Length: 325
Image (cartoon, rainbow, N blue to C red):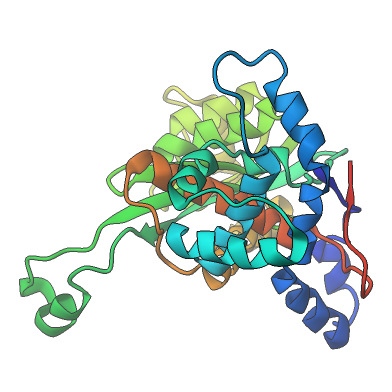
């Protein structure tokens, strides 16, 4: 069962009026209120009965809601699994629930899809998306050696790439793909847009930088009737050569001029992706806690859904908690 929340105003609506710093500060303070997440444990017995109905083998001892709480605490506060067990023990003395060992927490948390628990904003009209990627560190090993010896150091840091399609209006991540550092951005553009379409999102315009200026991407956008917001390369040809839609965009760009083209395509909204990455790294840091590849993918995707919730969650009145659906 998910927590049902009312959607807060979008970033565009907030930008039209002066910031209320009292409300802004209280919103950030409430991120650390643990009792907001513990509300999902109130139906412990009902959740266990529904999970064990028709199950073959040993029945579940702990409901999925407990591991939703564990995931939220782990990602928001960057807590290792052993320390997370200790934190849950402290909370259990106050609320009253059984706490599994850290190995069970680790195993069950890998099965939690936070999108099923956290409320998602419903998009009714067409959406402009901005697509970009950013590097996330896997390990800090050798940091001092690289700082001292520079390019002569044999130790190199490991990276993963987080590719996102961001709602340019709300800065929410609508689709997320995690790849290794040697995967190019062009390869993930189509899967990100297709992920938005598969989720029932009507994409009106797709924004990206010049690296996405290629025939395959323009042909895909033309088939899906999506307006491209990708500036052509400086030496781009005006001839078709396998992509009439790209050639038309090149001619439109060159005839109109760069400044007028950006205003027409609303290219300035592409900064939404950069702001999303900035918020992501401010909230979760610039590295992942997981080591194995499957766990790294799960962690980064889960953090993206937690960030979406933080961007759209409403401000709760003192002494109140979100309602559960």
